[in-house]
Length: 348
Image (cartoon, rainbow, N blue to C red):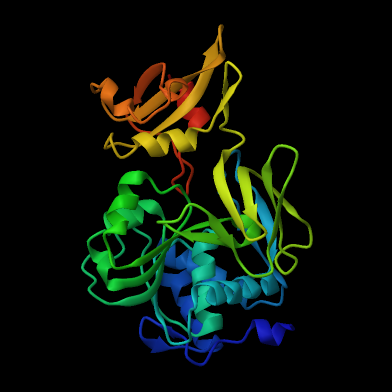
């Protein structure tokens, strides 16, 4: 694949209803940088970087478990990622899609590249919490973060296929999504894998990996990903998984978050899933130092103090029940909206 192929714009590509070629996109990028709002300026800079002579772009990681870092991603790998997404989700040229994710991050960048490479008719909007507000159009394919899906729940009836990534889908949102005619997938991936390398329907338990993806685990039982067309090196994650088959795995939780209480390993993500739909606020569980058990389980809830009745924990095993409950007016978050667990614990 040479630079000419990278610079190709599919003849069916449209931006907000208007057919654009490479030079039209470059003119649009200059206009965005000169006169656009912040989200448009960022997009304009990315378009210029995509069509420059470099074989790579630079991207910031999300900073979920540490400070964000800048990494280089090969443009060819981004095109392979776009093609893999089309293959897995059966996406066709001419599909109408919505790009409502910030192009400051890889997910928004890839929605744009998929549209350019695959020939989508892309509507480009500001990445707000409810990007479908006052929009009654029908879309074949949309990507969102959980907050956007939650805020757009009534409008999602006009979306045929929706992928959700960037953070865990809580049980309350999952139940609402299951009531829709929309085909909804939860995706698994990260900046280093150029967004998703696996996905599952929200009614399913296991993630299915994309074509040409090989999975294994290390000695911590954390997922190891081999995607030669995306990365020349294997990618070792901090996500504890159970490998079901060569193409399926169950995500248990992050190794960073695992709580060891009296020798019992607790995965906060699994506990949170059991109680999130019963407490209509954002929350997380985390380990706190304990003289007897090493760590004890604490529940942190966003907002003003409230009464938390014991029956809300009926679905939990005895060792999964929180020993302490704390409240924080507003959670500290990463720029991409993920909760900073340890930083929030430090506020208590």
